[in-house]
Image 1 (cartoon, rainbow, N blue to C red):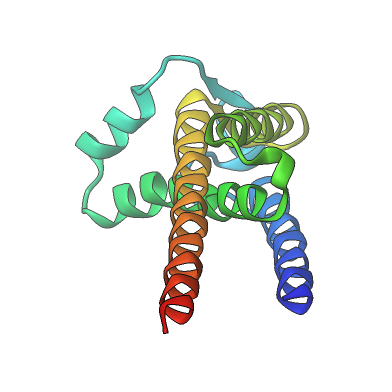
Image 2: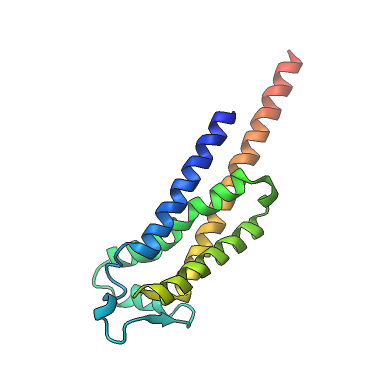
Length: 158
């Protein structure tokens, strides 16, 4: 049991390193042209604007999948590991709030320190991903408790 938790901590911190690398250091392949972009830094503060534009104006289905679902999936482990590893954070709402705060920090950093797009829609999608991750962790923990209680009651009835 302790080894599993240690492994989960290691995976969580590796995930955080990868998350910050991808969001702050890796090249942004489509949303901005870097320092060569017209106007350099860019931002979107209008909710659902870029989601709409990506969904409607993408030349094929892969761009919306990669960009929109990617932003959600990227934060699912964040919500999952926070909820699963830290018992003081066993609140789905609190984990979603921490996902929101972490995503906000990333978006502000993208605007201030990189030539990428700071986007309110990324904040919305990332927070949704953290929320989904917390719900998955909650479901697994709840199911494990039921299985353990059920198997204990079966043994005692024998």
